[in-house]
Length: 278
Image: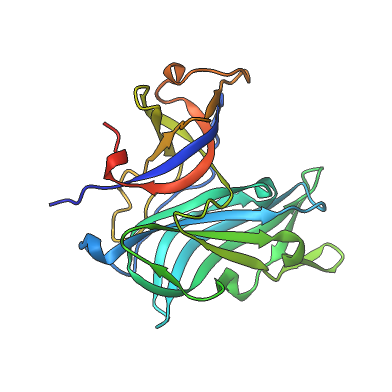
């Protein structure tokens, strides 16, 4: 029997309707581990943020895989894409971006997070691009301050803070190399962390409960062969959430229509069965 799924829950701070929604990358991938017993698996969310930089207009990092590494050096790939997903680090100086969701991650202790990066490009105010040399074929192993545990009864959020100023070094004229400085924060349900930004489209609206379901573009779960699962996010307006239309004016939840492109900003967690939309 298929286990009832939980829902990724975003407590809304602000929602903005957009006229066009630009996708930032695709999904697709596989896992090195599988299990059907819900008591032996947990959930992991990868959040990406950055310290500000004054030297460039954009710093675009294209990631092609994210993995967890246990104490026996086993690699659990939780997200991958042949085309990769590009993040502008400079847009994340005050908030995080939800990069990957993974359910059915084997419960246990993990020592490292591995990012596989395809490219880093520096973009100036004139849109001129400069490629940055990558270390170790783009494979970057990140060591949190101590081991971290994935449990079956809560969502673990891994927040990666890439310090662009300390990571990108000028070797000689127009030649840059990446020596990554990444701060890793392990956040549980009790930790708010930074705001999370979710671009996507509206799937359904529940005005009675003050919620709607958002489908984030390019976001799929990559563990235990469930990459075709619907990884929609349940967004709750709570008591303080506000919605702005494309014209910048406030609007009501009842005026939100299915398939509208939106950008939601709020705090992220995993909701239990009681949050499942009706």
